[in-house]
Image (cartoon, rainbow, N blue to C red):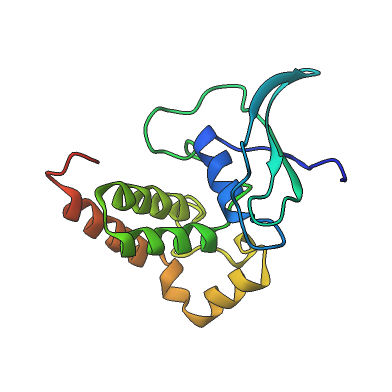
Length: 171
């Protein structure tokens, strides 16, 4: 097995989301007994997840370089900057799937994911720029329905979700 890439998440929540979005070649993302280890590697602190795929037993490993400062508490996936690991189309797909589940926890996840998509839009711009889509699938989604990635559409969807969850036990 080749050494894993050293990934730079903004938070622990983003680590888990990344692993969810990157399944094994057999299509399964769960690992048997996903042991987690945090260790120092030179000047950096790394978070390592290692285990065998539940579907096919292929050994898998994820190595995340931890940020120097802990992220803010709550469901925020990573401060003010856009993710370098997860693309806007992936966040939007996750948000839409969470809305479909409709539970309070899923709706909170949808809100967090929509807020993440908005972080890709530069100040003063109206939409997520083409360069933020790093896969053919993301580019296809953007071309098929550019309004899905517009500031106005995303803010309206986020406001509707927030209104839907007012009064529940979850933000």
